[in-house]
Image 1 (cartoon, rainbow, N blue to C red):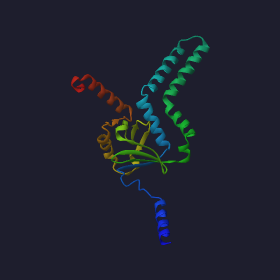
Image 2 (cartoon, rainbow, N blue to C red):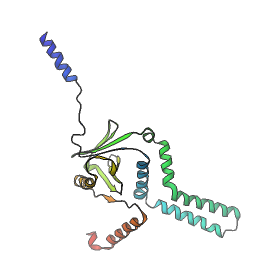
Image 3 (cartoon, rainbow, N blue to C red):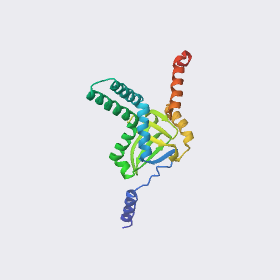
Image 4 (tube, helix red, strand yellow):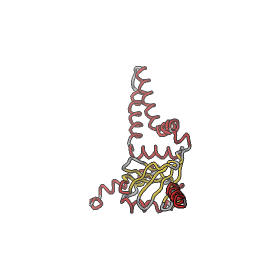
Amino acid sequence: MAKNAGRKANAAAQKKPVTVDKSKDVIYQVKTRRDSDIIKAYITFNYRVMHPGVTPRLILFGILIAAPAIIVKTMWLRIALAVVGVLLILLGLFRQYISLALTKSNDEAYKNGTEFTYEFTQTDARSWTGDSLESSGKYKDVTAFYYDKDYFYLGMKSRDFFILPKSRFTIGDPAEFEEFIYKKSKKTCRWIPDNFRDQMKQRRAKRAVGADPQAKQ
């Protein structure tokens, strides 16, 4: 009986669930929710980086379409040109806010206040939804790395895209995060200008680099 009792005790010990401290090797951690600021940051990033010329083109096309309405004599054509032109101009000016409203009305994570956690260890980057591990990737899989005044943006080969508010780092110093990712992935963190003046500075810098033959070497 003693032997049977010992076997049962061993079996129970083997079945006992093991609790893993997933934060013990975490160097950087960001906890956030998909609120209005996060959604707006993603939309702004998408427009500035992925489709940077769409807004000015919409406004330009709107002006070009609306302008002939001044000289056209046919009333219905004048109205049509003016309406289409103004709509394109408004779409160019306010499409960010239109996208924000549409996303908020359809995004379940926004409606439910779902918490997202992003963790960075010495070997990999992980994303959690609540207590569920959603994805894990090596630093060699980093495809893009950007920053602006308030956020880091990190893209992975798995099509994961991390939006990391600098104000929501719960482990690690955000001031050192850029250097950490560069050392691990060899991806340079690119600056996204926040205002028109900074955008002009960035464009002038790119032109200067392009015109300097030594900079290309």
